[in-house]
Image 1 (tube, one colour):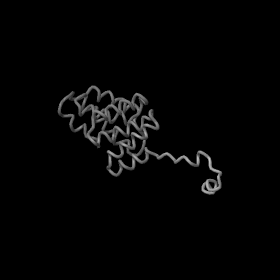
Image 2: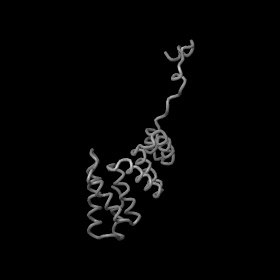
Image 3: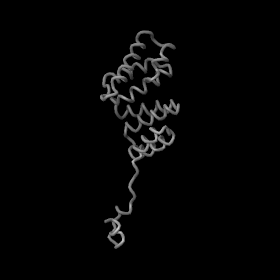
Image 4: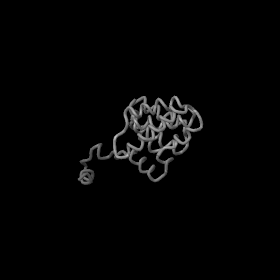
Length: 154
């Protein structure tokens, strides 16, 4: 119907504006394909449209972690947590990055925050168990090289 309206002069401004791409879904699809750099570009575009979306920031942090840009990932996790203090995935991801960085106190804080408001869903239990074991390891032995195993996500 829009074609005929445009053809015969019945167009509106809305008919002439292209639809915005769903950059978030595009980024998620690119990530599933293993194209993390392209996914990051799409996440940046999604963030431009929704600058205060904590979940976009969290997803960016995950992709940045996979591309070994740890400092940027930490910044994105922290920004996500500024926007949503209970974002479980951000606490979880940040905890293990801090643990790898040699900050057991920071990791402990975020593991506790994760466990205070754990995610729900079919895969949640394995993440909860992993966080619980890492927290127990941190409490039992303190800082040291034994945390390398706990730093590896399931």
